[in-house]
Length: 336
Figure 1 (cartoon, helix red, strand yellow):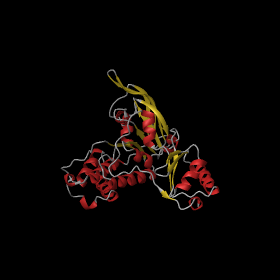
Figure 2 (cartoon, one colour):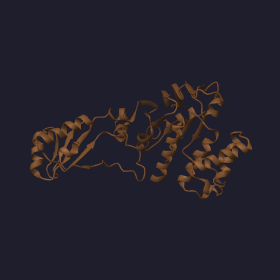
Figure 3 (cartoon, rainbow, N blue to C red):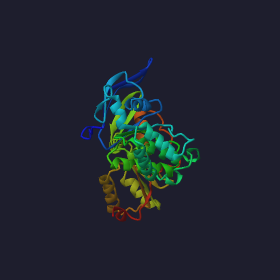
């Protein structure tokens, strides 16, 4: 197959899709560079899965122009299919077959020769840590093993672009992080990942760029850092061991929100290094000691709520959203 590595992996302009009177996608534009992870976020029903289905040739579009791996989706759909892999929300694994048999079945569907198919299956079993269960039926596998096998099957054809539609839903934290590592390794080898997820931490950890889809429109796009900067509300929380220090700090930082009972102050801040350094220098200059300091900047949960006006998706089991609290002996020691 001809390589188009110098071109963007995915471009879409004016993408539209409606079912009857319901508009699912309302003219969205996408640009995904080769060898990156692009994450599409949005509430349930926002159009994420429809976008993946269109880009992966599973359904048609009402309007718009799409190129995948350099090929026009409308005029060269077979070339697009040969260049992509898809791992959907629900596993494509046949649970009555063994791991090896599932991979060999996919090799046949990819029209690989018998020897090539067995060689590729052996490589993927090794890469996804499935050698020990290669001859066991998938019905006995854990959720994490099934998702690894599902992704291994997607890779049988060595795709340039992989669509992952909520690939870690239902996985325990350890299995989810193992999947993240696999995704990072794929990108390091030059594969492009188009990821939809309900877990905002997942997008934050993995994606080079993130787009937020709501009511069929892209309402924001950028890096995780850029999106977080769209939302105000950062602050620095100071905790004091004794009331004298608390009261001196309260007088010094008149703009702070106060909790006299807990001996804490909440000072508005953008969370940047310069702001933190200035605050610590000010505390040190006034000889004010603090016992704890917490920096809170808007996270993707805040971005999601601000942009869509809806509650954030459910947090993955085992995921902590609590801020990290750093003990502070003195302001000068904290600055170091």
